[in-house]
Image 1 (cartoon, rainbow, N blue to C red):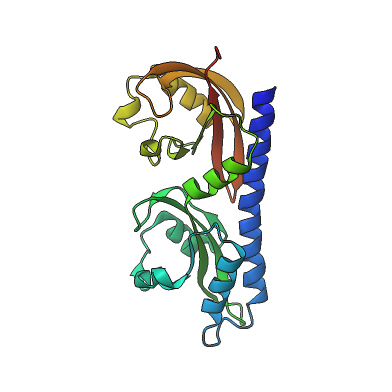
Image 2 (spheres, rainbow, N blue to C red):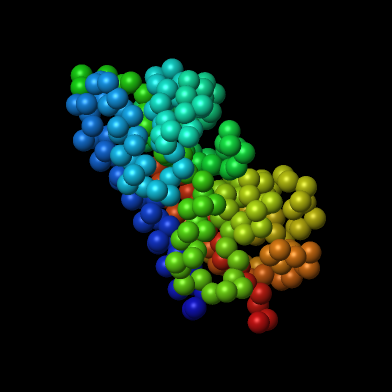
Length: 244
């Protein structure tokens, strides 16, 4: 009961924060619809969003051809005019013109990131591109962990249903694909459990793998839950040693 209470609270906190970031972006876009065509209008929108959401790495405007035209804060200005049209979430935005929460991807800056994007229209309701919130899950999740009721010694990891590790306390695992990375190939029960985690939004199980930060192999019991945003799901897994 202590495990599931901790997990349920953490998952709700994480769900709330993702929804808040999305809601903040939606509201600012709506408020700014009449000013985006004015000089500096989009940049003001980006700066306002970053000020409201300090746990977002940056915010950018991607035009209707998939070029990143403006970005805030200013230390990322060197990325302006980069062609991001080949990224899956940009392709999805240009095709559907609906909100997108991306899969994890390697950022220019060298870490795993996700993108939350919403379409942008001018005063005449013409699609002009999208406003994108660039999130580093590692920072967002660790900030939540520090404020959570997860007991010491419990391990938290987060996986997309396709097997990508979005977050792990062992940083070298972040961004790996559970189902085809050689690191996991010899752990059949972990792969079997991974398939269960991928297929079901909640559940419990166990597997054998290295203890966090160690080369010692241990049995780990787990429970998992799901957070969702714009059709994307993250499985939030809490693991612990059963005999302590």
